[in-house]
Length: 266
Image (cartoon, rainbow, N blue to C red):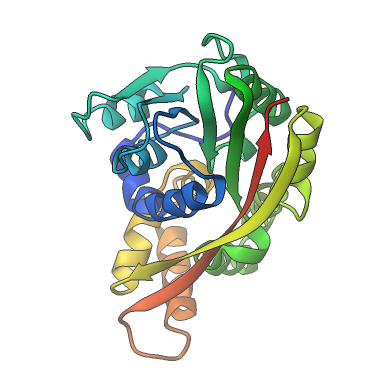
């Protein structure tokens, strides 16, 4: 899954995104459906948000999470003792699981970071039985992810390198209107339907917002960790002003919207 996502610190990821992605997992399950006895594959499972959301339900008979980041897999494996759960280190772009061994295959917030997302979707289709469901969700970075727009737009106003990084990140594959559905069709799935899934990200105060960013994984972390201390301090002050938006420090609730698609295996 030659990923462009830096994935070395599972706890840092949880502080930045995992606490929210489990909310989105619930929305994706509701959109894609689940039935009693389903064997479910979670592709690009990361720290286990989707797998754990599935394990909280009675319907799945078995849940397998797979991710190329061994640090994330090791962390995910510590989060539940549910005997239905199993986590594997592996490449989502070259799945080696048996054909037709699952009723449903999900991918949450991962496909857009994969080197060949259509190939990954085709692999998900291969390991899902005929008539089974493949479903995925990816963030709408430019249009629907408020917490990142606050960060990247502020950083880009201060630094041309941030402007370049923002452009690369926001133009990632599958994150534009219609792109996820097009990938599903290209991968050979049928009766593809789409949805826009929205959750809320709730922060206690600016520290609760900024601390995970300062220690982030992924593109945000790649940028922040290159900054000299004085430049990071300047950025933090500017982002704080954007977070406050003229008000007092304290709670904020930010919308976060993902594109979702569901298709059936022929």
